[in-house]
Image (tube, rainbow, N blue to C red; front, side, top):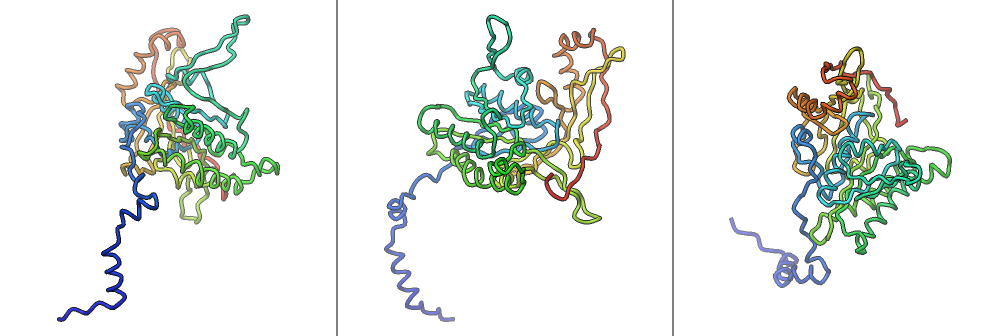
Length: 357
């Protein structure tokens, strides 16, 4: 069969392309470089976290969400990240808007903190160290949080803060937008809109662009995301675990970890018992990687959270933890001999809603 002849327009187009230099065009438009990303680095978390989730820890240069119901391990993961960052010369920038922060717990987890003492009274008057800490004293709206992060990144760009930065926000869903505050009405749609405008269109882009080789520093944003349970859409349907503050952060996040269950915390308390005295020292919790755009691995399993971090869900790990804290527990329990018991999983149903409460 004879080949069809090229049309006149095709012939002209082919002639133009043969003489065209795409490389020179890119160079002229400033598009020749800035296309390469840095090799992926991680902020390591505990062996237990790595073992159950099959990832080294927190991926640098990304948006990471830690979500779940109350007291399921989110803050433990956040603090492990802060401690690990300090050890590697990465500056933790701690943003607390839920106001449940506890310095004693942070230090118990291993965060290096200098305690400032009043010489006259002997009372603790402040905490300092290799970190930045801000809370609701200065940040009262979603816009405030976004502006603060952008200001810190600008200081870094201007050479005034020579560190890779790990932003740690506790938590999305705990603070309203400016319009909600001024209207004295906590409107969830306004809040979600502010998260989209301030973070999806602004802050998040700054974070991920730091992954490029042209960026001197690499910045990471880890957020605890409060959740709520949505009622099933049909009689035979299942409830859904929903994020407070809308879904703009979910869409931008490349790594999402969910702690606990949909309709309950899904935790079981592990206690030490002696002569009728009970002391809770750990909780077993379900955990899973729900979104992973780093290496595609999604896993689920159980992990044990303690006041000192995560440990593996094995009898050996529990016994080793008991030995490591023997003196501390002996002081609390009034002796070194005591029993360890585990309660049933907390499967108490959490209220469901048709829209974000």
